[in-house]
Length: 181
Image 1 (cartoon, rainbow, N blue to C red):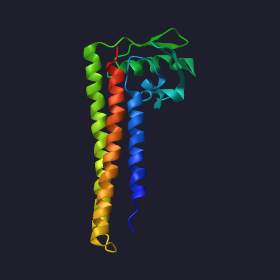
Image 2: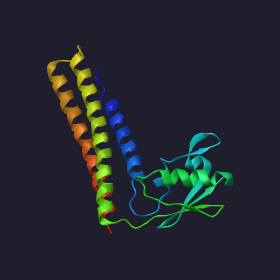
Image 3: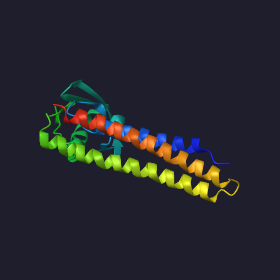
């Protein structure tokens, strides 16, 4: 028999990944998750910043990164500087790395919303792929009658719409937050 709950769980996982991606999008306020995608080369390999340092938001416009090993300060600052999508310029004093978060211009805000919209499309594609897999499973199910197959397809379409609406709502909330001065 066909189980819609498994597909619902897969779609919920896509939503969770999408929310995590949206946390990384810069809004003009300092947040440690802004740096979650950055990896610094320490001890001969690339490691996520949160594994080599403590990242805190000192206030709304400043991130403070305290490395566990002070010899890694240059590598951490270089890794942040290398990520051009963030547009951040860290400064270190030998003990900590301070990352001032500059105010966003109107043009930069629109660019950030545009970049975030590509993440929306990726999430929707993932949802549609799950829908297609579920529809194929229904079509090849021999033990189902035609009306049960039709009902299952309608239910698949309904949950697909439900989850794409959640993605749209999350994106609208994030884009409003970005565009707010």
